[in-house]
Amino acid sequence: MKTQSSNIPREAILSKAFQERRRSDVFKWDVYPIDEQCVLRLVFESWKETCRHGLRLAVEGSLMVNGHVSSSIEIWADTAPREVRIAVLDSTGRLSVYNLWDAGQGKQSQSHTSGMLIEPLPKGRRYRCNDIGLVTSFDDLVFRIEVA
Image (cartoon, rainbow, N blue to C red):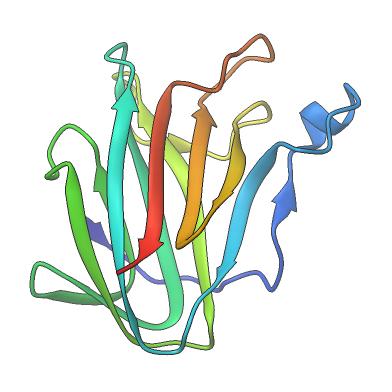
């Protein structure tokens, strides 16, 4: 896990590459409404082993994971437990979420064709991610975030 800080957009950002192909369901960046203080449960469901896959979470405020406190954190599927508890210590009620990958050239994210399909769940959301490419089944990384 690596921590860093950044600003949070106020609303989700759609993928322009997929919009150009008449898809309005692919998000480059999600903004998930949460309580100002809560506990979240991140569950890695599956990921391709073609490269490393992970995600970045951030709030305007602070998160705590495994005793580390920061406004943002990167969590990689290959080095984290399958389930991770995340305490939102304080926030403005918005959790920033997007996928990351590393194919041996260093961390990458937000490429022109990267994106996520988002499925609402009773206690959260499931994310089906694509790292790069327009021909995809959105299964490079699948994870869910739920309110614990």
